Image (cartoon, rainbow, N blue to C red; front, side, top):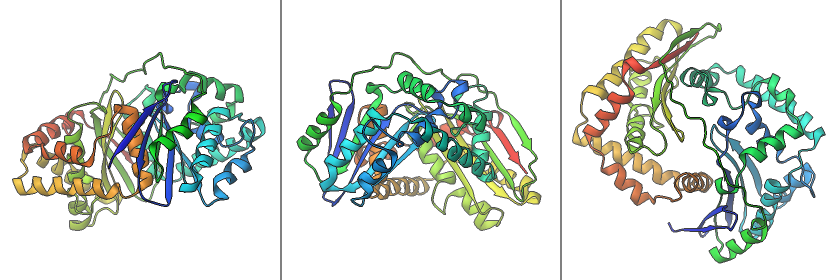
Length: 406
């Protein structure tokens, strides 16, 4: 797969992959998320993701939504702790339509007061809905424990109290402070020649004034392990445990990705799923996750089980962590684990929308995109001792935090 790149005079970066398909994908990623909010702005990045579609200097909300939907396309967006993304799917013949629309949304949104007031209620309903799901809410509560007192610990949706205080002036102030052209990447996958694509991008984005980021994010450096229990009268007991981990530039991050996949990744044959669900029937959902940020990261394990099984389930999880710390993987086990991860990465590239956002984020963070062959080489270079070293660092029981909700 060949990647073409281009940088505009205002420092917006562009990456494109040409594929033979009638369907195209276009995205804009901004290196700004909820961790860039001031305390009184909590929820602002996510609120902007909602309201940026509510009107521009020349379009009302209905016309924004209809512009691509009228020709079978669709618009979407998401917000994380460190990024905001707008992306679209459409037919190849509508590239100019999609690029012009995305440019209008990104550069000319006016955030009408009436629309902001309506969307506040939508976001508050989203917050309330989230609170009704303890198996989802616990992830935010666990991050709040890990990153106590730091912007990374605040949840992305914000609070109803904060959201109600948002005004058009505050929205524009956040954008002015945090949306910088040198932190933006336009990514594309579709059947269009790169020179034609860059001409369209130049037409609609070259005139955007350059705004360069002149600050660094507040680093997180004060982790202290915490064990906490919350009583919420839930039917199940929900448990999370974990530790801070490597940032997105750390040389050991690939080893932790592989280790996480072995332990509790997406496959049904992960160690935690096999022992807790398949062998003992003690959990419907058991998973582990590794999330890397610019200056830190986190590893966590989540499971839900009946309250009377909680202590036993926790002991089983800790036993699996101890196995990875103390028992070196055999050559066959390691080979199978590597093939599984590489196969998952190859399969994921067949989902063009996921691939779009992956290449956009990679180019935003690293200013390059590793091919599947390059990623495979990094995975295959890992040794059993590498994995043991990471396991002993990240799974150190003296450094693990634990949150239980029951």
